[in-house]
Length: 629
Image (cartoon, rainbow, N blue to C red; front, side):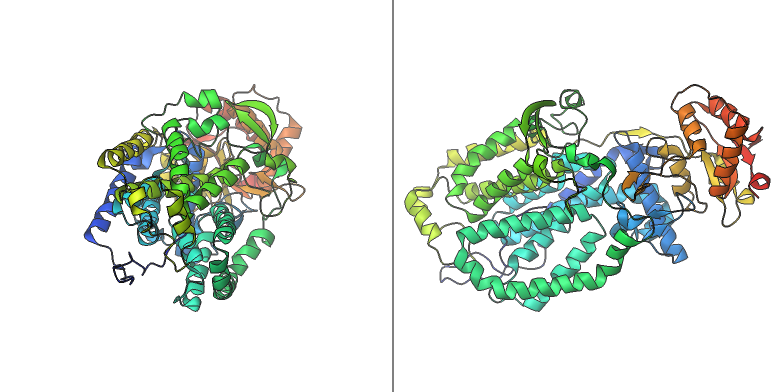
């Protein structure tokens, strides 16, 4: 998600006569090689899954991994049955799940439904994850190269960082929606081109509206972060270039209005459905996300999934989202680069502002150092828990904007070295600040060339410093673990005679945020052909607030207790009557127990509740159709 002041894609380096020949709009061979390198890196990061793609899941977030496999299956199911993709009753039956109110990734799962139908959700997931990472790097490279820097190497290096930054790779462990940032560079670039002389304001507005609409169906939270970043960029630019901003204000406002109108037209119903449709909710119970701030030590620590990282770091700072985790060499490099770039480059100054603003905001309500509370309050301490738009945000994720700004500074620093320029004198700064705002803010200064020139050794030292800062952050393959396939009874269709239309199959244990991995995959890997109660999602609680999953019914509480290692509960007539009531609520047809570490204990519990089971294929089965009616 690069954030930068982006030049017109058709504007190239200023020629001797002051003209600006257009850069080629089609990719060159070098561009294709860079994008190909990103694709290879995407395959490398996902290599652990491809070893056995059908039976491997993230060892860091296995339940999230299974949730997104379920979503890919949902996309294919919606297309195959021509059903509303915004809602599903294939889990949490019969109430269902509002998928617009969850991280549904519909902008990906629907267009990829043919791949899911042909090869299964496991292949679709692994393939898309690599494409998301490499695609983000590619669009970042494209925007940087065409609008910010002259050096292809600078754009390629920064694009690779932005697509495969430690925080992004960390989210790739089961949360591909936060690795799917390929539209964000295009959105930022489009916003910052609005109102430029010679631009077609209608086309710009329509393009922006389409990009924003599509991003809504990928990740709304990242869209919100991008909007906040763009607001800070515009404010910072207004302070430095007030006349230019005033000249662009009217056409930019027209483009924004047109884009907003198009987005409203296309996304009004899905957004209404998200906040007012069935199984919608308001806020999150307890505002649990608000306490998740970035630890100060995280900024200088190497992330677990990098060549310099180790799983042991999670024992020092805690198991948190690793959104920055830049390592101390890169932090040191940025601290040195900022004053060197500050006086020469408007984008560098804006990137610095972003680092400061979003770095402070990301600390959360209490500032922590090495997982210990420092006693200092952060900005979030003073914000009400129910503040609209941000009521469900995690403060730590605001640091992803900081990461993007770091990527921009990396591009600018390499580009200045490639141009043979170092620190500039006050005279060259004055020349820079007095330049007419003609859209060349991104071009290296022609003034002060002699004072800003650097020698070959300084340039090589600069390249080496950037390499030393970035090489430790090279990503390693995502950690993965084996998972057993669903029972043959499930995959072979042996369940079909037992589950008529409108009835559910009740797996033991029922899927939830803890026990959701195994039984949720039963649904995902059988093309959602049968619904299950329970699930892994956010839905409305008793007061309409969002809760994880659904409040357990009495019978599920007993099952979870045993599945989690608890003692066998006492079962009497009251518990048996409640079990029948719960089965009727779920419209159950059959209760199924497959392989489980506590299979014997679970079988004993369900037998006490429902009577003896039958052994059918490789599962224990309780046919409850006669009981439920």
